[in-house]
Amino acid sequence: MSNQPWGAALEPALGPCRPLPPAAVRLAGGLFSERSEATRRYLLRLDRTLLMQNHLHEAGLWPQFQDPEPQHGGWERPFSQLRGHFLGHWLSAAARFAAHGDEELRARIRAILADLERCQQANGGEWVFGIPPRYLDLLVRGQVIWAPQYTLHKTLMGLWDVWAWLGERPALELLIRAAAWFHRWIGTLDAAARDRVLDNEAGGMLEVWADLAAQTGQPEHRELVAHYYRAHLFDALKRGEDVLGDRHANAMLPEIIGALRAHEVTGDARWAGIAEGFWTLLERRGSWVTGGQSAGELWTPPGELAARLGNATQEHCVAYNLIRLAERLFQRSGEARYLDRIELLTWNGLLAQQHPRHGTPTYMLPLGPGGTKTWGSDLNHFWCCHGTQVQGNASHPERIAWATADGFAIGGWIPANLTLIHHGVTLHISIRDADADHDTFAPHLALPSARRPQQRRFAINVRASQAIACTLHLRLPGWLAAPATLLIGTDEQTVPGTGFIALSRTWQDDHLVLTLPMRLEAVPLPGDPARVAFREGPLVLAGLCSEERQLAVDAGQPGTTIESCEERRFGQWQSRWRLRDHPTGLRFLPLHEIVDETYTVYFPLADAPRASCRPPASG
Image: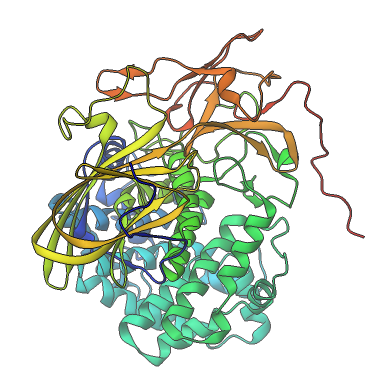
């Protein structure tokens, strides 16, 4: 084994990366396919008429004297001020499945578009929503109303995604006609009224207007983008001021994403630096071991995570939108650190907060002592997190690979089949978990021992329709415990460092195996280093106990006290751990496998000095 890869370079950043076409990536079995399928089944369980109940009622098209039974309840019940929000999420998620060949969902989408067109015409040709326009009048007057723009945006977002993913022209036409109403309305507001409008959870309105402006090039759509510049927030973020405070986290994140999209579309310097400024603040404040940061729907102040630790941590919507923002920032810079955050939040957010069978979410992810996940129902909750859950678990293929200036980047280590085009040549790339599938996929990869390897190992097969020179950039995660190894053919090389390893060569029929060493580590709670959580690679572990226990564990080498157990189940390795030589027994499972068990994530260390969880006063 030589010490240098084959003339390959280690890169901290790739420069701008582009998303791949929808049909280019397909999941290839395993956990992510199972969770995606649970989402698809949930979408299909929902009745089209009930999905449309509030839009039809608002348009006066609900049959007289007909009371739906069962009807959608919770936030979708007819008296909720957020009624109608879930339909847009459903359209966004269903469009992704339909783009990968699901004709049943495509047919339902088309039927819903026809229903929405009926609603729009009944409402006068523009309004196409499940709440009335007067909600916005109340907002302008300063009356308390529950996030009407957030609700309206969901329908607009769903229409845009159906157009962007499926090319369904009626969706774009519905969106353009609805935009005419908003352009006329917001153009009549003075500066003070516009500030009130933007301060009351504008949601992702800015992003959808930027997407529409990029599509049409119409001046009225670019004017809508300009109207949603929230100066007192955006300017402070660009200056590096920490204005997050105790603000509502998920109200802010879609605006940050929208600002980044507005800069991409308009090139206007006003939008530049907003998202980067926000991300710098986020990293400075510290995060949970899962990659999340919120508690009780609010941003957690710097050094205050220990004070906020409990059952109301990590709202699912915040985890999902942090992933979306990190995706945008990665596409802009190609920096691997954004993919590290996405990986943490995918395993310990999207997967950990989805019921593995029903496909429904838990609103919050308890991280304090003795937590239990509370699952939403199919028909009687429809929290905001129901929407981000179906979108998040429908979009796993988008977080695997991207196009670069000289080839492709593979950054999300999820089993998949890729069909890529480079200079007219087709490359078929398959990614598999080599340790799970070595008997069938790579029979020459015999395991060195009967013990579970502390590593993630991926077999990558590349077949090209003809020999083609290009670069494959493979991500080496930030959690690596030792240098990675890369096997091409029979030549194995060590690859020190993290970031991306660039393989520039002529490809035609090549077989690679990438081994990513990992270890059990104790991750301290920011602001309270004597309290730790345990993580193996990207997987957060949860202790199966109903109370906080003090553990006599060496934080530098927790593997000396916590040992692997129940390692093998048929053809799969499992991450299972237990305390060894400890006064109290304790078992640990990956957080994403917890369903109804009571669990604890953070534990105080015995004999460790306690630090204040609050930052020192500034002088």
